[in-house]
Amino acid sequence: MAMTLPGSAAPLWVVSLMHLLEWVLVGYTGYVTLIPLAGFTTRRESRRFAPEKRFAVVIPAHNERVVIGNLVDCCLAMDYPHELFDVFVIADNCTDDTAAVSEQHGAQVIERTNMRRRGKGFALADAFHRLLAARSYDAVVVFDADNLVAPNFLQVMNAELIAGRQVIQGRIDCKNPDDTWVSATFGMSFWTSNRFWFLAKHNLGLSAALGGTGMCMSTEALRAVGWDPTTLTEDLEFSAKALLAGYKTYWSHDAAIFDEKPLTFAQSWRQRLRWAQGQAQVLSVYLPRLLWAGIREHNLVKLEGGVALFQPFYVILSTSVFGVGLLLAHFWMVPLVQLGIPFWVGMAMANYVMPAAAMLYDKRSGRCLRFLILYPVFMYSWIPLTWAGVLRARNHEWAHTAHSRAIAYAELVSREGAG
Image 1: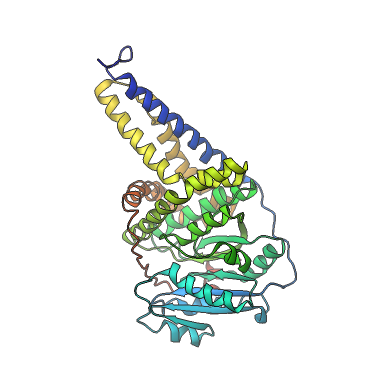
Image 2: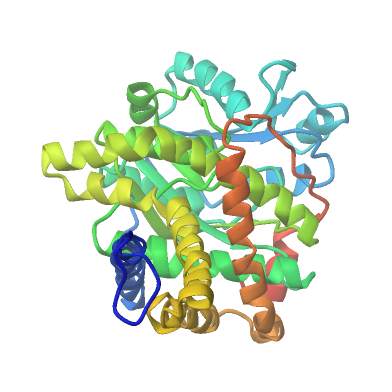
C-alpha cells in the first residue's frame, strides 16, 4: 500500500515529486525574476569612433515589394560613409518584382532560386558564402525586409567592433504599435524584453542572443563559427554555437531597428509558432552542450547561456505542475497555496508592471497604454504555443510572414519621435 501524508490521501511519492518540481520552478523563477532588476540601471551611451569598419548590409527578402523600398532608402540614408558599406538584397525565390524594386532604390540584388533550401536561414547562408569569399568586409549586418533603421546604426556597430565585440544585437523596436491590439501588445513584449532581459543581461556581463534582424557579426566570427542553419531559428542557433566557440553576443541598446509586428492574432500565432519550434530545436541540441561547457570551463556566461535555453521547458513544467496540482487539490485536498497559486498571481502582476515600466523608462508614447489590459492575453498565449512548438519540434518547414505596412522612416520619426 502506498504511503500517504497525514490528513491526505495523496501518495507520498506524488507529493514528493511535486515538491521537487516546485523547487526547480522556484529556482528558475528566481533566475528570471532577479535578472530583470539589472534593467533598471541607467545605460551608458556607446562611445563614438571615427568610421573605420566596412560593412555588408544584407536583407533577405521573399516577395517583399511593398516594404523593401523604404528599408533600402533607410539604409542608404544611414549616417555613415557610403564607401564603407554596401546594401545587398537577397531576392529569395521571389514571384513578384522585389528584385526590380530593390534595384530601383539603389540596392545590389542577388537573386536566388532554390525551392529545396527555402527560407531566410538558407538565403543568408548563400549570401554569407559569397561575401566571405570576397574578403572585403569587416562585418555583416542583417535586416529583415519590413524593417526601418535608425541613422546611427552603423556608427554604433563601428564602435562596438572597434571595442573588440564580434557578435552584436541591436535593439528591435516596433514601427506599427498603434495599428491593432496585437501589434501593440507584441511591441510591448519587445520593449519589455529589450530592457528587462537583454539590457539587463548586458549590464550583468552575460550573453544576449541574436534576434534575426538588427544583428551584426564580424566576418572573423562568421568564418570561425560558420552559418549552416539546421533549425527554424537560425539566429538563436548561431548565438548558441558562437557562445560555445567563445563569442559572446553583446547587446547594443543604442542601435535601433523598427520591426513590423503582425496585425492579427492569427498572423502572430503562425510567426510565434515557428519561433517556438525553433527554440525547442535549439534547446535539444545546445542546452546540454552549453551547460557542460560552463561547468567544465568554470564559465558562468556559457552556463547561463544554457540555463536561458531552458525557458520552453520552464513553461511546460510550470503549467504541468499547476495542472497536476489542481487535480491533487480536487481529489486529495492538498492546499492550493502549495501548488503554485502565488506563482501565477505574481506572473499576472508582472504582466502589467513590467511593460508599463519599460514604456516609462524608455519614454514610449502613452497611446499604447489603452491596450495594456490585453497584454496578459498575448503573453499567456505563449503557453499553448510553447507546448505546440515542443511537440512539433521535428517540423522544419519554413513559413513566410507577409508584410504590408509601408511606413517611411520620416513618418515614424514624426509620429513616435524615434531617434
